[in-house]
Length: 429
Image 1 (cartoon, rainbow, N blue to C red):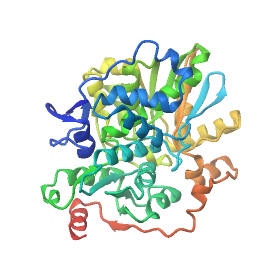
Image 2 (spheres, rainbow, N blue to C red; image 1 turned 90 degrees about the horizontal axis):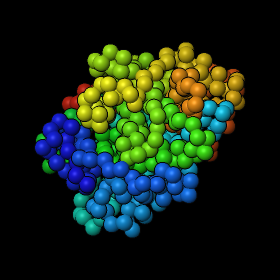
Image 3 (spheres, rainbow, N blue to C red; image 1 turned 135 degrees about the vertical axis):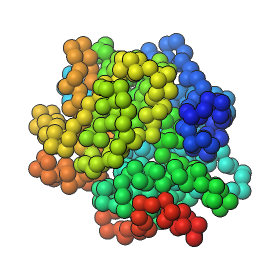
Image 4 (cartoon, rainbow, N blue to C red; image 1 turned 60 degrees about the horizontal axis):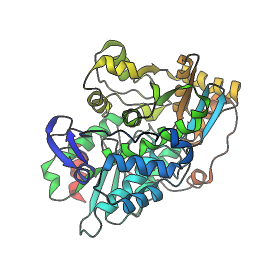
């Protein structure tokens, strides 16, 4: 598998180089030189394949011959050992639940696959990898769980103080061992900028062998494409055109869906669903991309003002706005409208959405006759228990994996949103 930098197509990398470096030397994101088509009959045969088998075939197409087939099959098997079920709300609307993994968020697909892929790449090597990751919510918990006690790898997670839910914070600040949390007195964009600057800082290269587990790393996107095929498999019997709504923050999730479409998944339309941090819906409307400072909302994982993966979407469509518009529609809600959507899903269908899934749910009002809409339910609603219970006026059960966190002691390093402070901390360790 050959990849190139989105800043310079002449900068190339193997899959191992791209995964272990995360960012290209010129700070571009790595993209596959080509995305192959799945063999004829693959989509029609989805009914007869498990999620694991589908994931193996897709990852084999994307990774080429860089990883022996038996090893790749084992990586997928150990990473994706949980389901992604569909729940129908009515005949034309369904939730694709992606929170059945260990951290109860869709990020488990990417984090667990990446942990095993990285471990395979450094097998037998005498080196220590330091993974830097910025999180606006669920990435941190999934990465912490996915890499916990992984030999040869330590993880440093940066998250914005006061802007993740209590349970999300406990997931990334209570493990210890090879997991360290940095509480940044700023926004997710500040955290993301600090991580990116660290990668381009030559003063750190002698002390750290750095990589990232954010969706800037192509290894995150490969397994995220799996569940689009799995969702389609569960609704293909309807014979309806499929529209998929993707709650979006850094837009890695949507990029993975678009890659699935390029491989041959027959999705009619994607909806880029977000909150008031709506730079991509604004771009789809105006044709102008204007990053801005993110604003805090109840759907905090989408509080991103400068989504990194937007450039990958441009690359997939050769920077052709009209081609992008043919496949993607924008949608957004503010907090009040998000709460109303949560109530509507519960009152009309008895379904409990988290704030992110609720925006995806409401965006499916845009679907037409002859279409079935899937919205990605990206996190268990209990991860946002205060917002969900207050909005719906009910008490929801908390899964044991979350409830046991309540009495655990948070451990985090508090830093200002300034790269120099983070750099000094790294060099002082």
